Amino acid sequence: MKYNFFYLTYIMQALIILTAVYSFHIGYYAGTFFGLVAVGLSLIPTLVHRKVHIVVPWEVTFLIALTLFLHIAGYSYYWYVDFYPYYDKFTHLIASITIALLGFLAVLIIMRASNGLQFERWHIFFFIIIFTLAFGAIWEIWEFTLDSLAGDYLTKPLQQDITDTMLDLITDLGGGIIIAVMGTFYLKRKSAHNWADIYLEPGFDEIAVRLRRRWNSR
Image (cartoon, rainbow, N blue to C red; front, side, top):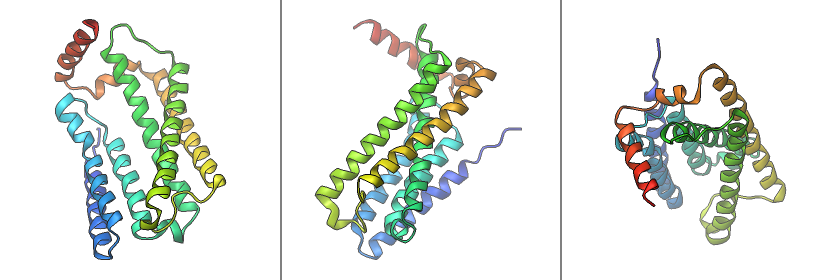
């Protein structure tokens, strides 16, 4: 029997909303703003399901919501300050695992939707790692930019020093490696197309055909 625990995602979304309300209550309006943004981002898997007919696994939707909650709560409840640096690195690890999983699912679906596009397992392995590190680098640039432009509105700087930044990237690398190893292991048991079919509904094929036609017409 296959169990779905999407209600865990709803719980995390509710916690994000409560954190945004709490931030407003204490006058931390940046936390309120980013909390509302986080709620919107957590709804993207639902929109993807409705518009593109891709069923995002509950594990991934939960990790997305958990990642967003950890980042928002870390500032609103001062967890980044009280439990530094362990909370920061734990949050980065969860975020990197989430991004790596999204990259893995994206590769499976792209291979399924394309005509003849195939990757060897070792290609997928390194793609997941590079994909995760790329997002990690973008996040560090975002933190640097926010510290420079709006640092006075945060409960603590997003970046402490170069050591903190490098440890964040190393943590991101670790999360990418974990999913890369797991992903290539599962691809030994079942082909990429078979894995992708688990998450695709019938309407997806029609959308994929239209996209291929547009691409070929260019």
